[in-house]
Length: 335
Image (cartoon, rainbow, N blue to C red; front, side, top):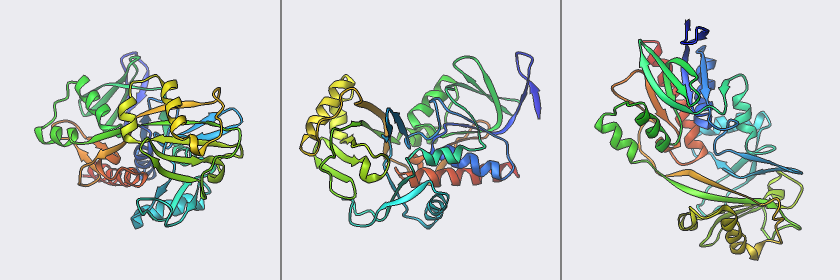
């Protein structure tokens, strides 16, 4: 179906629009497209993947978001096995390494963002595209960007972190039922600083290259050579929740120096010219909701919200949420 937009050019109305090209959005988009639906994803950053992110550095690449994932369900294990067979994931380490008792853990090959890059293949994704306003009119969602571009679809799925989702809904003057508002507002996120860069020699991190909670300021240190992402000595340091909360609004360079000082026992000198500090404002949900892995909002057109906040605060939760909501969106269109 084609309709004319306000500028007079022809524009296709997609079956489904998806705001957010993180793992949940990519998984849902692929599954819906495989079932013959037309899909468009809208992503505010420069590429897909969300927190499964890799930074391109001079002389190599470094993962600075999610570092590994585990499969606790057979459904996700099937997904992981497929990623391994396609060469974009591998088992990094087995049981007994993580402090939370988690089992076999996997990482992306050659880096974490390789997985979302694979999922993004053959999907229609607009990047650097921030959804500003939503309007449901004559059976079609109109989603406008900050620059005034409008895309249209019959169903709408939002997979952004819930605070960003609530902000979009508020800007759009879309009222929520009391039940939906209470549920969405109950999902809370923690923040995290990541510091990464090149070292002058290998760090003192035991095999297999993961050191968890060595002190109150650090959640984990990853030796990127042992992980297999690079051959040049480097680390990624994730700050603890308490450290991040105390220093959330400080200058990034100050935060970086504080974390390097906290990790000094395990590191040689980091090249300050290559040191990067990234603040993950919505690092992971610290309070999720139980349910079907998504929420269908009441009182509007076909509008769904999904992501790890509706499942578990893990890569697995994001994947299972995307799979679940895709099933329901497809079923709803067949009625």
